[in-house]
Image 1 (cartoon, one colour):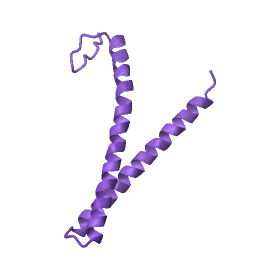
Image 2 (cartoon, rainbow, N blue to C red):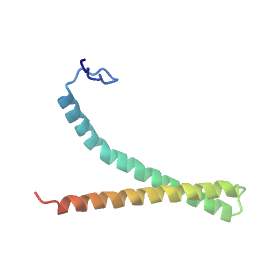
Image 3 (tube, helix red, strand yellow):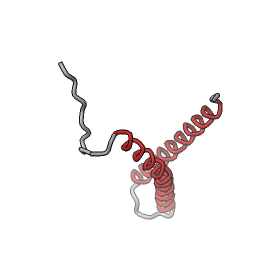
Length: 100
């Protein structure tokens, strides 16, 4: 009975060692962009929630449920960003404690 390897879905002709190196370099370049996009999304959701609250306070015709949904979305986005920051700081601290 022989065991055959599973081919990648993309059918790439790149060797696995080259593929992992290319993926790692792409990940390094994309990580900062990914963090930046995430922070921009958090900022945007906070801005939308603030605009909705201001519109409701000014007496504009905006449904209260939309204001509450935007506030909750902003809270969840900010909580996620805070937790991600906490995990990154914990990982960095763990790396600095590691003995070589």
